[in-house]
Length: 73
Image (cartoon, rainbow, N blue to C red; front, side, top):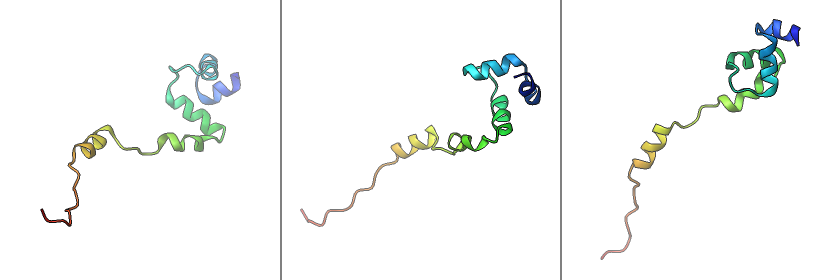
């Protein structure tokens, strides 16, 4: 654990916190650890671009077009 912590540039306590899943560990430490373990690809799904809340609100606010009826009144 000491060697891994040294290679990551963090304390052993941080590595222990990472093992416990403590949410206060900096994302940079996580990314460095994944990179060192050749597991950085596991973050691909998390880092995919997504629709923002603003884009979603705009889409919902946009009036939907209706097709004209073929029947005449």
